[in-house]
Image 1 (cartoon, rainbow, N blue to C red):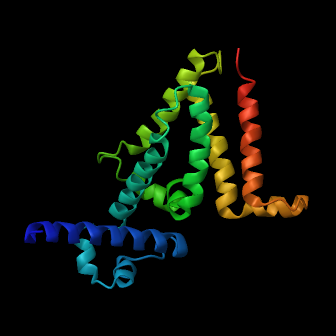
Image 2: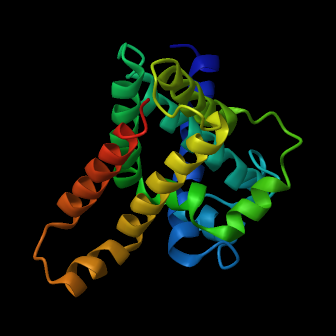
Image 3: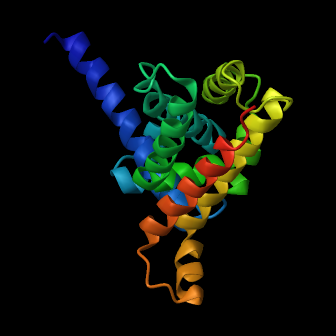
Length: 212
């Protein structure tokens, strides 16, 4: 490997370190309580090094959102080979749950924490289509389901939003710990992840009823 290649690899690895440190600090301390200096200290570099890559925290959180949606698209991408659209839709729901549980800090930054989202919105002038692409995968799958007789007489975008909202609610309850409180209150003794799985499967049964 030549000098140029080594420098490029180091640059890419350092950028990954910056994003990983920022993700952890944002979720632990909150947006306002995390500074560029905090991020630099965590990766044992000077703040000046961070500014070689990002001009401020807005750009960092923007990149974290982009990376998060790219990862979510990857989770959906492995399901392209599922020919039946309703089976694919069900698998997408399970993939979404897996994404949320396996990447909880990223999920919270993307969908739960309000402060980072406000700063992402300040960067909308930049090229950022990952979020649209992720929703379009759901939208197109629902449209295919409608061609097969599901969700007849329902607006494609609206029912897609209902599906995403339901999945978001289940995953947020799980990642925030509130689902555990529900289990305790009901005194069911059920494993939390089993409770999440059962709730999702009941939702699937409801969707199955929406077929002409």
